[in-house]
Length: 154
Image 1 (cartoon, rainbow, N blue to C red):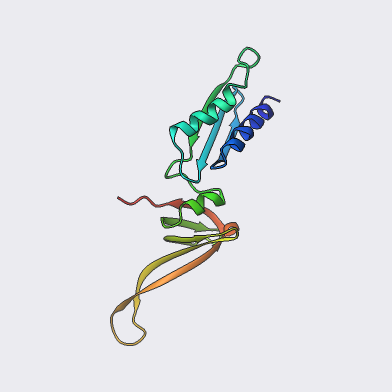
Image 2: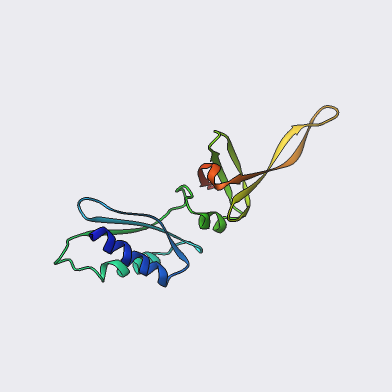
């Protein structure tokens, strides 16, 4: 019952902020509420405060004691929602597929069905000695992705 009430308050808060979306939500046995959000334009501290208040201001601590954590997904967290892929177009991703392949390249497109990665690699010349740089692409369906993360380069 408590978890359902919290979930409804969370959904109501997110309905007021269409640029934010839910990544994970749980209420632990000790009534610790954990919410992880992301946003089409990233997540600021003010966004976490907004969602926190949407929940906390509508619960009665006298009735049910709880603690609340609202966090952003984080730069190194795996991508889980299609909206996260769309917001990361142009960035480098490392994608593990269900057939145990690993692709790393620039995310050039993300639609409702798949992502498109592009990268350059050195290959042997078709004729003669030496190598040439070639551009490769991989179109990967979302259901074939076992894990995907943004690669942070310094």
